[in-house]
Length: 399
Image 1 (cartoon, rainbow, N blue to C red):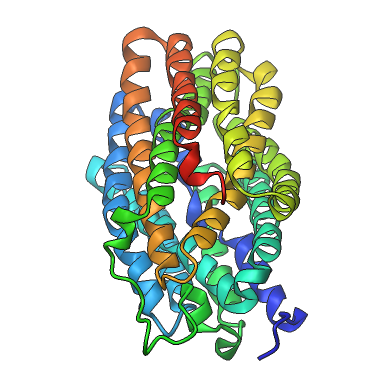
Image 2: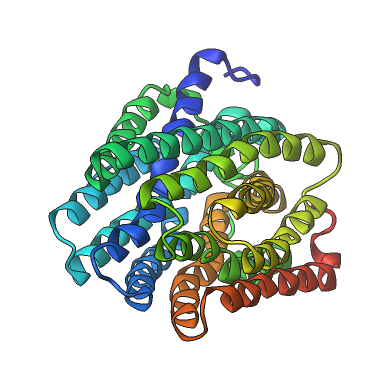
């Protein structure tokens, strides 16, 4: 196997990253306004989303371990594709509380598996030396897919209603399945895909206890959990505030916020790749945390269309930096353990604790004190992440 990946097996990988957008976020950004228009209160919406997120969070770390041990990495992209199709189908059939919750569980399962799966495939093709560059390109295609998917969702939602949005998500999932099956299985080195040592017979992969002993991983996961506790609820609440005040059409407004952010992320992910290649991932992640408090203040003062562009540009920069730096830092810090995908799953699980609690926290607070003060409170979590990242910098600065 050559050390440099050929274009023959890269274009299906880039296509997977493009169409897997709906496996990561899927119908999520549209679910809130979809349910609000059907009479759901913000607290109940947040609770349904949270239950689904928690269920997915519980399986994320085990899934990472399964991907490490699996000899068929492509299967772990097929499974999320099926889950996305199921999630879209369920929510169209019924808007009963438990049906909606079940659809969110299916969506969360897709989100849990897709990132470690694609990370493993990327490592297996490019190996550790080429991972940063290939991962950066992957993320650019992924954000482009999010942007195109959101634009199509907004247009189709405006013209034909939410049914078209959910059908589009299912189509993206089906195409991603077809694309991953076009990647030759033999082009993926399973040992490189999990970051194993050269001689596994003498140096077997580390046990799962490595996750509890690895301080860089613990610091990264905790800082991300705090960040996402504030970050995950801002965009859904921002959309709910604008729609509730009659300032925007639901589908088109949500789509516009996603399109702007993802467009910025395409450029930001390539910049992050270059910075990490010349230095390391620590300063990239530090900068990403700084944008949350700024967005909280901006959302407090400006709602509706006037605030969409600046707030989503800031979100695009912060999130775009993390999509490259977080998997890169995990892969670099766990290299040689044979547990890279397990580590990816563990980080996603811990940050998922924050992200899964965020909709319920933000939804109930907004119901009690209003949208404006809630945005300020959510922005403060970014300051807490910065403090953690600086306080424990000795453990993570070299990565």
